[in-house]
Amino acid sequence: MKTIITIGREFGSGGHVIGKLLSEKLGIPFYDKELLDRAAKDSGFCKEIFENQDERPTTSFLYSLVMDTYSSNIMNDMPLNQKVFLAQFDSIKKIAREGACVIIGRCADYALEEDPNVLSVFIHAELDDRVKRISNLYDLTPNKARDRIRKNDKSRSSYYNYYTSKEWGAAESYDLSVNSSKYGIEGTVNLLIQAIEIKEKGTAEKIYNVPEN
Image 1 (cartoon, helix red, strand yellow):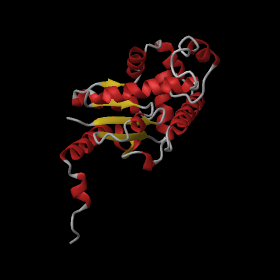
Image 2 (spheres, rainbow, N blue to C red; image 1 turned 180 degrees about the vertical axis):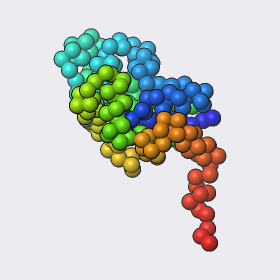
Image 3 (spheres, rainbow, N blue to C red; image 1 turned 30 degrees about the vertical axis):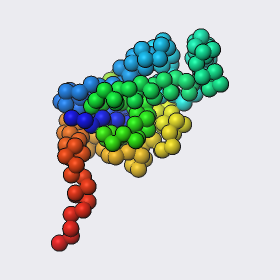
């Protein structure tokens, strides 16, 4: 298997669970928060820097304070948040060169957009289902869950739109967009496996070239 699956996701859509289960069924590595560990190891920056900046488009005072330790020798004229983004960007490319895997978020689809082995996916879901999931996961009232969803989606969208030339969540930004409310977690995983099989067999082009009766 050669396919690298990148998964963008709405908060509460089950994107993390779907990606994890997909990696387990396919027997390939999975990177979500694990990507932060890898980027820290590859770059020499401490993990807390990546955690503080994770899928956020702007810097914070704490981030700037800590990052000053490293800025003297690395890309001196570049804004601090971009240094961390590029370090993560490089780690994504290194991970992809190692073979098939599942990568959650962090503009991985953009980092690997020229890689023919990539299948970029976006997972979304009905708001009511997302509220229920987040309420259960974090023991929140529906109103507080809805507020957390709004804030996380805004952060992810701002991060993606800030660093890429595409629009977060827009169908044209991805190879495949799936509503997990319609298919469920297992159903979405099975759907992605079928998409991967089609891609790897090279049948997608043949489907579009089937002669009309």
